[in-house]
Image 1 (cartoon, rainbow, N blue to C red):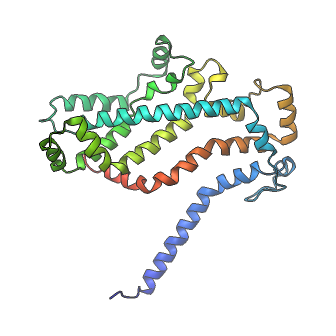
Image 2 (cartoon, rainbow, N blue to C red):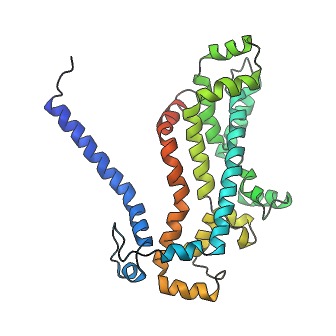
Image 3 (spheres, helix red, strand yellow):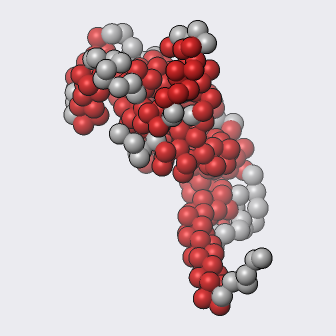
Length: 294
């Protein structure tokens, strides 16, 4: 028999829903405003008349942005980085987390390797040594300069490691009895059971690669090799329009820099906005289960 909730319970639930709605609106308001601004006319944007809805709807800002070779090229470079870098990070993360999740009696050097990687998460080599390493290995102006220096994210390894340690030991023992080796056990037992934490790490990895801009500025001597966020940083933050033609600059004056910037910002955030809903259901579970057991 289901009892009717008390008045206090109803008020508590209503207050919770109200608070969540307010927080959701606060989080979504900047994005909605940027989207509305990108679809508004230049006069409305300059006059500050744009709120949550477009004013004098137009697609000129998107036509300008998508018609620029520099934007499309940087967008393609970021997609390439996202595809290659995500695969590298996820594979190396899983391959490293599996042996480190074993007990010291099963992997005698475990403690040494754990401390080795843990120290690298706290103390970095520094920007100049990293730059010299990338330069002396011939990676400058290549996609690998954006991928290899951060190929092993230690924080993600710790999340996956702790999740692996939380899985029942009997599953591994049963796989060994059936004749499976370590690699077969990893890919056939551990990985399928680790979807929550792997989805969480995947989201971290994708957002990290997509939002990174500083490494593009220091490792790419040619602006034509900039990933999207580095390109946007030079155009929106530094306002460096040297790569634009005279016709582009004249069109910018007609469109208003606010609408063009808003269009570029929204297009830059769009891939993560599309991917996040598919991984969100695993996110909280993966964080909790991947961090409670040491």
